[in-house]
Image (cartoon, rainbow, N blue to C red; front, side, top):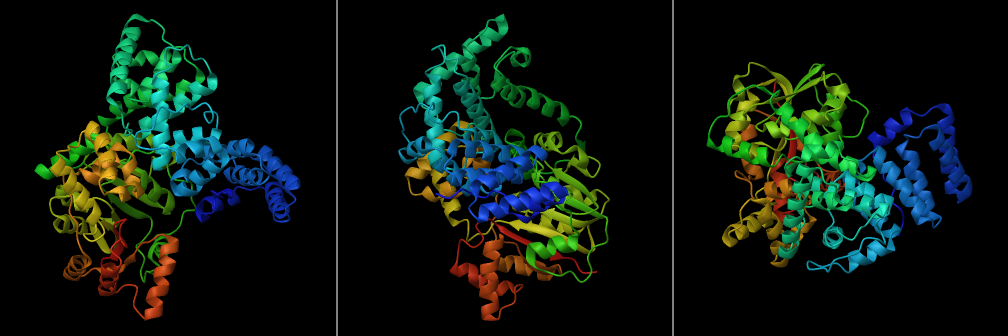
Length: 568
């Protein structure tokens, strides 16, 4: 299986290339040339010289990994790919399938375990693959969104819980257990837990609480295993872990599960409240996201080349703005959640001042803690309710509401409230659920209601297996299936509206808004462009889009993402 090239996307490569000195550029070009000529030893030598010169160059590590993979050196290749991922953790989300395929090609033992996995897999000993650096880095970087890998990891956790008193001091195994604990925290403990296993964990938790109270030492593996079943911060006296002598591999787990949550709690009190929370629906939605901030992420967006708003929109929907909004831009991100998208906008758009609002203080604190320092002067997080946001006394050049309107009491009424804040010639980026595309999800939601499932973490863990076994296996292809907060948002949201294109068309006409186009990933956009151009259709013809969606119900499975402009 060929190695993946994890850095093909233009923005990341542009940042890397901009930073290259003349010497580094010469080394990279020489290495690439030798690689094309299959002079692999010379190529490797140049990539390694480049890394010595620029040890933070993710592209160089990625290229070295690809080369080592081609040379049949899987262990060294895994190390190089792991370095690339450590330098740019967001690569895992952007190239997930390629990275998983590469991981499995580098570890035949793990690939066999995945091939043999099942919902009721027996405990799996992780020693054959526990030291794979790419696997460890993937576990720490983002949720595992691969059903076979999830089942193997669940089975290894079961194996580990049975070994906590065996005097295990294998550094590789403890490091693996720490990385697994980090993964479980990131995915909010979505892995299934058997009844017998749960009983053992409860007993271990009591032992741990007693040890924290008395100062008694426990085998290090116990802390890693407990951290893979529930946040360590839930243990009474958990703050003592921050000063406890533990293996270095467990220090990041303590930071992630004990220290950072305490910082988030402190930040909640500092969040500015712009509006009151208005109405029962807003309060229910707020409560959901206080309990489950959404989505949880580890690494901020990649550094990118800043662009003007005109170029940004042109890249998104291939629309040329006759009169772009004045710059510097004032931007509102409505329903910013945990802030990843707001951070991305502040990085990407030149000269922007961004106000990002949400109902949930827990989500906003999560965002604020992880905002890169260089953006702190241009990005403000505040608590606000869209139902009352039209009274804040501010106007904006661009409003992003790409995942919030369908969770309000009235989608189109809330949209009008945001429009009241948009300046003439201003732009809006909108995201709405498609009635047609979410048919299977709606059926799954109905099934779960009939089976009596609730939105508790325990029920979410149980219902995932039930769904996969009873006609909803395609949900495993949905990225939101692989964390507790995302699964709750997908299947148990307290408020969800779905719309169809004719309703959007009618609203745009009533509000005199110009439709600029739908967003799609590059490959899908190219294919759709050919369809429209070959048929002589206009890219902005919503009637054509409606007809196309009827023929292809999954066309907008990732929501209707589109741009509109308010006339001058």
